[in-house]
Length: 105
Image 1 (spheres, rainbow, N blue to C red):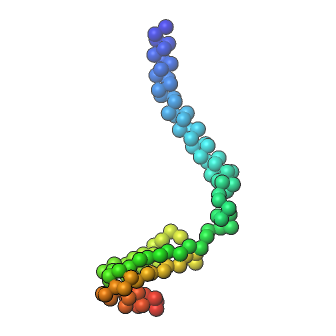
Image 2 (image 1 turned 90 degrees about the vertical axis):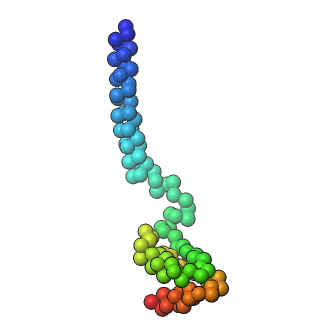
Image 3 (image 1 turned 45 degrees about the horizontal axis):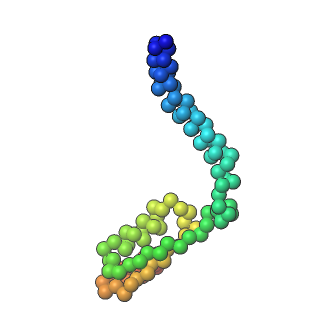
């Protein structure tokens, strides 16, 4: 009797993670291909929304050029679906000059 119990326990310990993993993968694929589009909020049903990215800046001459460059080139979002607005909070360094130069590009 104890051998059967040990065999069942070992079988459960070995096969439970395998069966659980397979069922997780199958249900994940099913959700992705059949149910995910139904669960989208109504504002996403028309496609990717247009967004505005606000960047506050106060004396940021050291990094503002890199920040804007990153937002323009490296973001994982369609470039025609967002705008970047930089709010210069009365900087006393050359932040506004850098922003004007970037804006002209």
